[in-house]
Length: 412
Image (cartoon, rainbow, N blue to C red; front, side, top):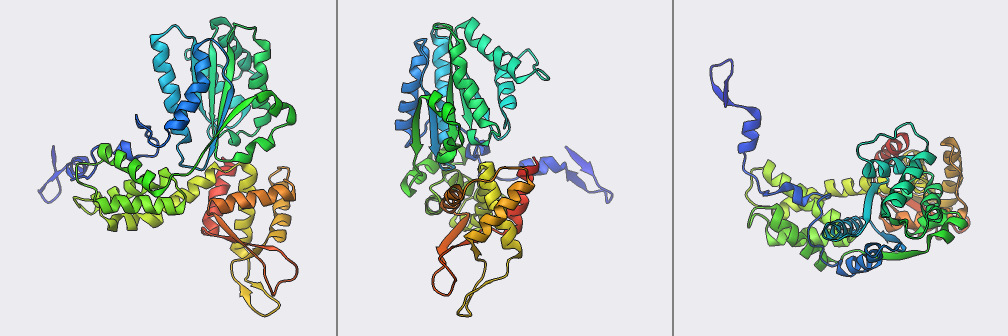
């Protein structure tokens, strides 16, 4: 299709021009962070462990609750969703009464929203908006009771649920209302934060009877194999140089062992190659993509942090944005450094402003350790020239961008 401009020249339709451009991609979706491949290399052990636990559901018995931990990009969500898909496929060939529901708790971040999502999955033709949480929860129990279903509820980023204790307690204690043989509810919790359970009330923790799995970060060789698998289905043959693939894997391994970072690096590098009309993805494109991807990964990671951890980070960003260099007794300066005691006192004021209860000094230190593990902050001992013995905190990303990112999360 062509069109005529005012000068009488024939021009192709804008979208036609775009579609006719050469691309290094064969299936761009296969290199996205949301793609779940059919094979999950280096997670065979975790696949077997989770499937072994959930096999009880196929026998009409309640499986133990499962909690899966690990940093961002360690394959937690992919593994759980893969197991649930396999379970549903097997169920079609058998007489097993098993139903599952996957919930993204960043979106459905309250007990009510999570229960509503469940009901929508189990009763797709019905609308429960406006009904109470108690009514919606009773409908879930009825779904298990009347159909004798083993109900598996996967809660991804479970720590993002604001009234988490109420949700977990309701789901775990809901089984007390179901007679033997009437079905049961099993929780599969996924979290980046191993400490999230400490937020739960003692009675809730005692009712869980959980199995726990920790996913370790990938190393450079593992990331290389994961990228090879993706490249074969996402890119045209021979369009990604071996050295570019190795570099993307090495950068991701050095930064965090995060498969999402590695995948995102190749995606952005491929986009740069297309933009510059190149036939191959080389080291040059990976290097150019690195700074943009690092920024994306950090802000994505910030969005996954628990609310209290976000408040601690928000406080650091607030102070870092207006802080003058720390002055030592010796006259030396510590640019960009914040004293942990000062941050803790400001954090308590920030928590009050947002109508949140503040955590103890012990939990504050634990959150600092988590943030340092993620590479968002770095800490050092104050050393000579400072009054007392304190911990100095430095924010690695740009303070204004961190502040803006968290404000969006809080307001959302």
